[in-house]
Amino acid sequence: MMYTYSFELDETDKKFLEAYAEEIGESIGEMAKRFMLEYVQDIIDAREADKALAEYLANPVSYRLNDVINEINENLVYTSRN
Image (cartoon, rainbow, N blue to C red; front, side):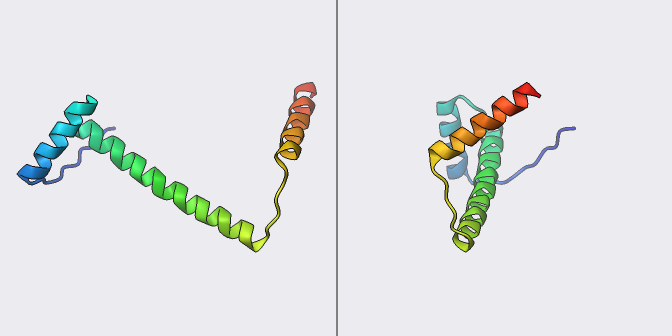
């Protein structure tokens, strides 16, 4: 099911958005939908990053990249054999 939302723009904002939408080859609706979804995803990503940083600062354990890669490779080999 699809839903429709509407919002009001003054003439200046309308022209501004129309010009940009035309420049990127999208309708205002497509552009608005994409921008809103990207904006919300950015907020969610930032919250997750803040949460991860807080967890790390509470218990600052780190791993060398090579150790992580080796562990992943060992798990892949183990998984593929079973």
